[in-house]
Amino acid sequence: MYEQIINVDRMEQAVSLFGSFDENIKMIENEFSVGVISRGSELKVTGEAENVSRAAKAINGLLTLINKGETLSEQNVRYVISLVGEGNEDKLESMSSDCICISAKGKPIKPKTLGQKRYTQAIKDNTIVFGVGPAGTGKTYLAVAMAVTAFRQKQVNRIILTRPAVEAGEKLGFLPGDLQQKVDPYLRPLYDALFDMLGAESFQKCQERGSIEVAPLAYMRGRTLDDSFIILDEAQNTTREQMKMFLTRLGFNSKMVITGDVTQVDLPDGKKSGLVEVIKILKNIDDIDTVRFSEKDVVRHKLVQDIVRAYEKNEQRNKQEGWKK
Image (cartoon, rainbow, N blue to C red; front, top):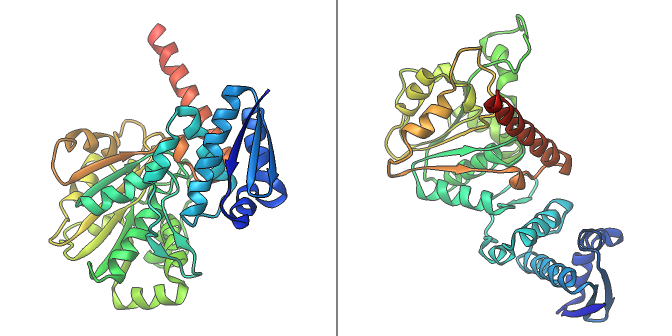
């Protein structure tokens, strides 16, 4: 049996570290097969030497997040555990504590993973950024947060959010209402993100003034978008022609963020995704960057991460079986 002592500066740190009903520490204990006991300003970690060392690294990583003002959740505890498993716990220091923006409810919005940190930095540093990865990695939400920040700081005059109106494997038939009401169901995720950042009332005022526009991709044709922060969501459902049309709308003093998941293409059979193609075509052009997310960047329920991982394994298995045939 081996033991290691970790000093905790303040009681509030220990309270945050342990979590409600000690749930955070129980996760550490179960993951690394160790025991953790709090004695005053000290934590004693006991178990097999290697397990104790890894558990101590995870605890120190969580203390780093607490010192940066983070509130621990199941998601970031599991993320720190995964970094320790990869030997990358030292990269936690590079996680910025700077908040991107404050939501309408006063909640600070920050990158929660290294992938999200790379993504937000890429948006700051480049005119066009492609964010590619599975569901739940914050691609759209963080892009909207960056857009709202640029708008509030008067770096741009308007925010334009768009996505292709492609049905996700089901026929919706003839929807009631005028043209805007017919396409609104496709744009709902974009509205949700904006409501969260700005509040419904503020969003409505900005929309009435023309400062914020949420529209289907078809509405972009023939326009030049100057002084704008433009987000194309669900870009895996664009055709090559639509993607070229969208990218050539770029005007002066504008930014574009294109997000999508290349494993969820809903285009009719035989149609190639414009997102898959454009990443290859533009990969060596300055001021354009691509950030790829993995299942480790999923910040939704733990099961979403498990589902993404299971689908990736199944896809790899199908490719191997296809190769053998």
